[in-house]
Image 1 (cartoon, helix red, strand yellow):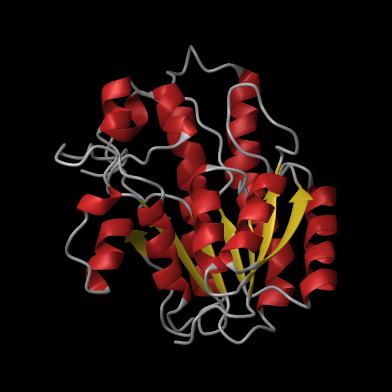
Image 2 (image 1 turned 90 degrees about the vertical axis):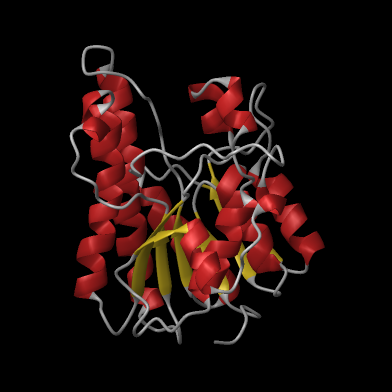
Length: 272
């Protein structure tokens, strides 16, 4: 399929990490990037704002539109999508990357954190998809990509953090259902890393040695880019793993993605 020149990519949670990396990879083709996230001013503990990423997109060769967005707010989603369509003329790709995490047991998971994870992960993914779909249905090669794991019903993935697992699997079920509902019209897929990825979420929720044994967000960005270039009429309904996608594209050397070259990467959650 052609590259992403002139195509419009709407990304949630794009102020840092994997969302930022996907934005910059698509920008190198000259894509239009709608950079959305809550972070509009520098955070004392977390790097990046939507305006920082928008500037990087322009420097990389793309065209950027930064829009503040809390995906729990349905009115804000409607307004953001309308603004993106008015600015760029349509939407070709939606990346549901925004996500909330708390790896805690049932008794340790506060109601507000439960609601946050379900509001961002499940409700946010569903509503962003629902709002973008009328525009995606008009595009030539439309894709929805959810940053969500393959559905793995082994009890070990629920035992330690049931709320988080349910919330991420809610995103995965959006993939499962919408891929079939819009088969032949809009591709809907999930993408998940084989290894932990060096993001703020990993830095906060895992020991330092796991961060050192992680891969850079670029591997997810390169895998997402490969998926976006596939034919949306047939390349749908899959729960992709980043490394497997790139192997399908002919990549065999992954050392360049390592945070610490020579260290065996740490396998991510939900993968046996």
